Image: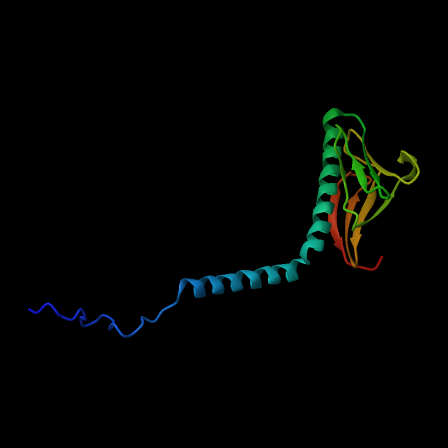
Length: 165
């Protein structure tokens, strides 16, 4: 055998030809494009960040109303949930409080007799689970969520309302 033996073997590539395939850079580019398209599709189907903010705020208020009702039943004492639409704040028992993003419009409809002060709204829950009832509506543009409290049962429900204001 000679020292100048060729390294070419049948079934392998020849030294002058490149292997065909996909480079790492091309693969990362395709994965990035798929991820970007998925994010755009998800935003289109869910209403984007604005819709998520609206839903999240409505769910938080519904959860706090349910907590207030549960607290009233557990203690056997009336408990009050207070919302201030102008200040975009709410208060629940045991020092729970929070805010509502400025981008959302807040409306409260409820019994005037339990309002703590003018401009604030309140829902009173009683030891048997009943409530004074009311509705808190959060709106952004043409989309809205209603958080309703039934006056007889105190049940808290959350429903989307896409109608005009």
